[in-house]
Image 1 (cartoon, rainbow, N blue to C red):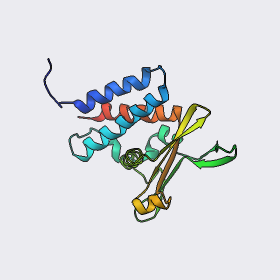
Image 2: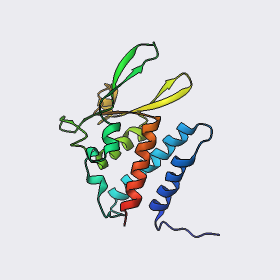
Image 3: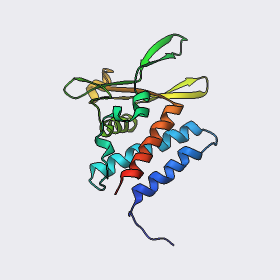
Length: 181
């Protein structure tokens, strides 16, 4: 029988999750990918917040735009179709800080992006974008407080398709494992 340990839990968890992201091809693979993304967002966010890890290069402090793949994922708009069959433009990235100032991928750190995703998911502000039964992507939103939630006044919104979720998850895992001490 094993013994309880948290030594390097974060690293082992991220490596195993990274393997799942790369290899899993079973039923409900997008749901599995989203579950993996949740772990890859929560673990680095919480370990960093608690000061449990230091990094060779603090990738979390870098702006989102420092990573070309993230810049590509979170730039521009995409045309989606609502349930009534009408097309609409969906922003890939929208964020207003607590002072109400609009932020960009150049002024938002990776750490802040992970925090916003964490809050969005933890508070169930995630909407699948479907074509029939096929989930092709997700929209996540963050609200500052209950009043903003009740009024639909979000301060963060992002859209990712399935491939972008995979690329986002992979980048988080790669950078964490590569830079953790």
